[in-house]
Length: 373
View 1 (cartoon, rainbow, N blue to C red):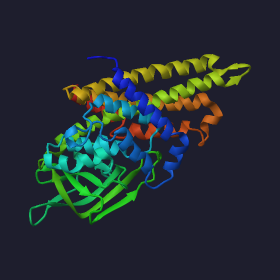
View 2 (tube, rainbow, N blue to C red):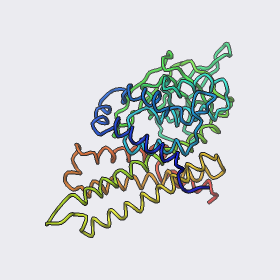
View 3 (cartoon, one colour):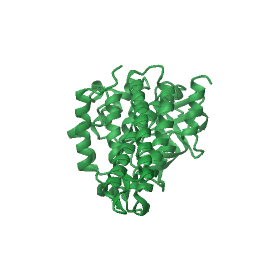
View 4 (cartoon, rainbow, N blue to C red):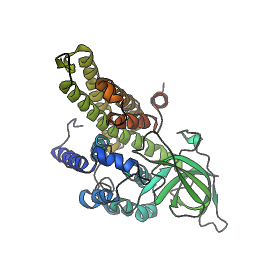
């Protein structure tokens, strides 16, 4: 294992960071937050056509570039740094990974090229109004049609990332064989979408209601949870990388303000209390990077450590990011408490990310189970 990024990976980071700085400044983030779709279609097209980001991790056989999970993590880290408003996580990290690990060659050929090209906005719908992230929380029934050539779904999925705009929805539902995965067209009959009002409007969520909605089985009937558990581990690692990007940015924001803000004739960074806050933030952010990067390596190798490292990274990076954003507001003082300050955009993203796919307490319990404690 090499603990350093390669020159090619560093160059990828530089290119993506430059793109994010140009296309996702604070003004653009605030504009997209106020829209129904939550992203700029022109920027989304540029990401696909000029940068090839949507297809970065998708194998060449399905229209992608075939890079590993470390490269995808670098992209996610830079997107977290820039608070990019786009359906990238839903399409590439959730839906594409579900297809890739489904073992369904026909489904891969049908859907992955569209995701790689940016033409298909996809998402994964598995959480229900109960808010549970485990297998027991999936209760939506899937019923085989009379002709036996398809299924219908009836039930409700909630907290679906970019569920309002997705043209392809991969749904976890129950058949007589157990949890299975299904593909639902965004324009299918019986599908009702309701945008949710959330604290973090940089990442849109929706409630999806299915009423005898036509669906196509993906993979083996009853094998859905085996696929989904792997996808959720990969998503936890990807989210940890995104959190690290945001945490690094707010650390830099806090340190710069501590240097620039003068009180009593001296920069506030010269005061012990502020010094200690910045030092503690640095320690936590660097530790979070170590956890996230190791998780990315495990995901790239798909080794046996992935489940435990995914929960470890998600728990630690969630807390480190949230603490960094809270301390950033404190260091900024009065101006940091105003809604107009960018510190609050990161604070809200940190809080929503902390809860996404299970909070730190959930993942610590999951980690304990996975390592046999």
